[in-house]
Every structure is written in structure tokens, then in C-alpha cells.
Length: 139
Image (cartoon, rainbow, N blue to C red; front, side):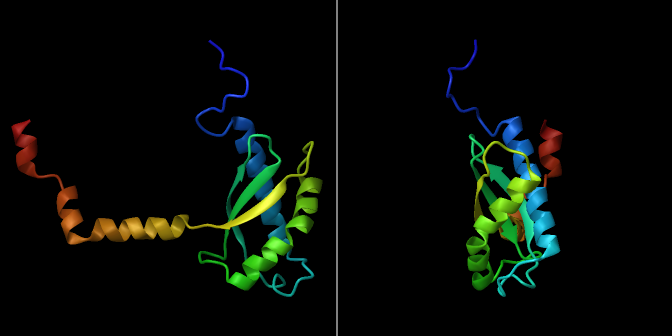
């Protein structure tokens, strides 16, 4: 039975994923060229780790970091100021009906992964993760 019109699926559609990846590549190329007038962005090293697209493809959220670490606040503010310029450049690189509004968020995935890793290495947690030979014999 087909889903009712307007019903959102469990996750992003294939089109959302494909377009978001194209936008990520376009942004990465822009940051690689580094031709910004803003002095806060002149020598910026930005890694675009992920881009998420809204269902209508009119909004893109780019998750960014500065080569494995958080961007300093002045650079992050400058990045948000440059969003209209970046939107224009992305619209030239990625053929879409509408130029998407770009929103920037810090990428916290690496910090979260390191926090989980530290938690798993704690002795009281590591003890519970190791299988005991007695459990295998009883089965």
C-alpha cells in the first residue's frame, strides 16, 4: 500500500543524500580555494564532514570543523557571514531548481566518539565487556 502524500519516511531520501553530498563536495572545493575577502576566512582550514538536506532541498546544514578541531568563534561567525556568498557559489556548482540556504554547525562527532572511547576504557566498563569463559561453557 503506498504511503500517503506528504508522509516523511524514516530517514532522508536517496535524493536528499545525493544532493547533500554534491553540496558537500562543492563547499569543500570552495574552502580549498580560499578566495575570501573576509580576513577571518583568509587562512581558514575547514573540513566539511557532512551536509544534511531538508526534504524540499531548500535548506542545507553543513557540519564543519577545522582540521580535526573546533573552529574558533571568530572564524565560525565569519563563516556564517559568508553564507550568502557561499550559497551563490554552491548554486553555480550544483544544478538545483532553488539555491539552498546554507546553515553551518560545528561537527561534534569526533568529540562524541572520543567521549565514548574514554567511557569504554574505564575499568568498570571494560570488565563488563569481556566475555567470560564460564558463560560459554554453560550454553
